[in-house]
Image (cartoon, rainbow, N blue to C red; front, top):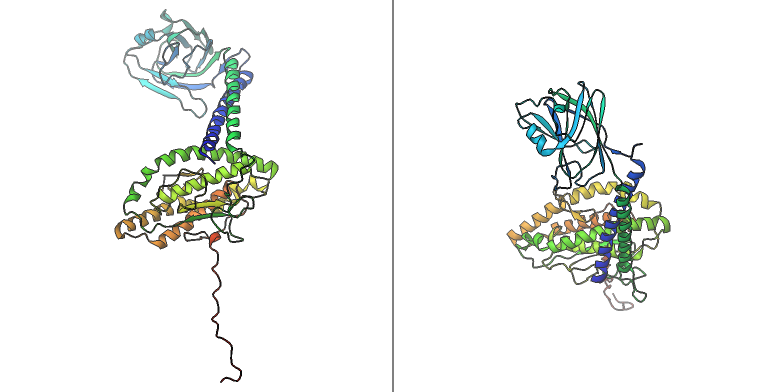
Length: 479
């Protein structure tokens, strides 16, 4: 794929994901408008049980001004706000007043400020404000713009106004020890039009992303396959002759004879541009793999354009890993390319499957691959290859450990230990075979075999037969 097509494909995936997110958000708002309102038209939070040993529970409400980052009510007017509270200690008082007045009134009074209510997995966020004064009876003050008090469940309804406000819940007699069940509701006509607008815009963005994907993945009629599959009848061999019956994922790496003793220390910095590009490419490859999975499920075929793109991402990843993480096997900087490059000392080829099992696509990537995942976890650990093509950094695996040991021996002795290199190649080869299988690119189950050495067994053709020495004609009767 040319750079322009790569950019179109990656940009199409990112745009499609953004559009999908907008569409989902808009759909959620429309769903909430249709199903989450009560009979009076309010959207309500779940009932939250609040308790404070102090005199009051307060919360900041901002409308039309710059809100605090920790406010639990949005900054724009919601329409009508409804607060409902039930106290376990007798009569309850709930009120809304300008924040400045409440701050002056509760200055020096111990109270609990509620930054956010408990909403599902989101935990409540509160702050205890110390003080020694008593506030007195709250209803005696005239700064409340809306209030309600009494026994049982009390309801406050307030048409929201711009400004900075405070909501207060306390015992009606002003005594400490507040225990209440609180629910907040809002009624607004904005949710449906916002949902329709966001969802409609998301569909347009999603369509634009799909168009970019089509342009990026479409192959002109005169253009033949790039040969991502060595020995594939549809394309020219990428890495030379292939051994018949070999595993269809072939990974090669050839150790440079004159490696720098110390360059391996900074290679992780040198590949930062590659890491940025690969992060985008792997995001695209992950989404395209899901699309390919549905295509296999319905047609039994892996879309050829997606296969070539994903194979190229695998190949690019392996070159960067061979250079900077998983082997330190070369000092030659990896090319920014998805195409095969026989001149580079590391390359990878995956045979394109003409047909794939529709049933296996549902189970092979998680259930059937589980035994291999345990082995790959030991090999790749935290620094090796992971899905989707990232290097996890939570712990080191055998590949990372052996690669560092080999690099240290290179620095000390000036020579890379070839036995360690051969073992590293075998473990990397195992990981990439499993990765290709989990990415739905082959139905052939990866072998439980550590094929060590720089050249993949699929490319190790036997040499010509050794001729038998010609002894010349025997003389009849010779002794």
